[in-house]
Length: 180
Image (tube, rainbow, N blue to C red; front, side):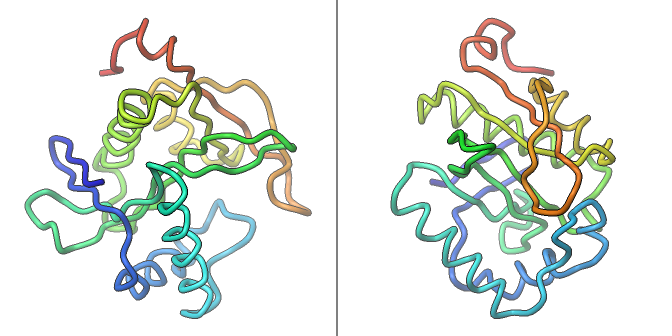
């Protein structure tokens, strides 16, 4: 399922994305708020990518390679919707990670808004959640601009402080209209 927004082209991840996945997720800068730290090696990136590919086989959503519309072969990040558990409760989790050179340009907000619209309009999801570290202010702002609101905390990484948990309900999203 390919998606587009004003500046972005999103395509489901492919096996050939493993090097770029490792380059982004293995970068210490993109993990400064991730207590699990960067991916340790290419083999780990391949395991994660294989899980993402399998997710697409079970659900009409998953992780996309995030590209610029003008450069659809250049991956600037990865993100999507995935079924996860927060404190024993299954959730439709919104997540993303962009290469450092793509930060500060509004791409994360544009991505989140497009994927949320897809999740609610095409997949008929009732709720979309996201977890973010308490000290990751930029990511919290992205979620808020996309319409999500903080409702609590979850211990999602063993041995680390709790993350903030955000959600957006489909009915709220429809009532508010698409956030600008």
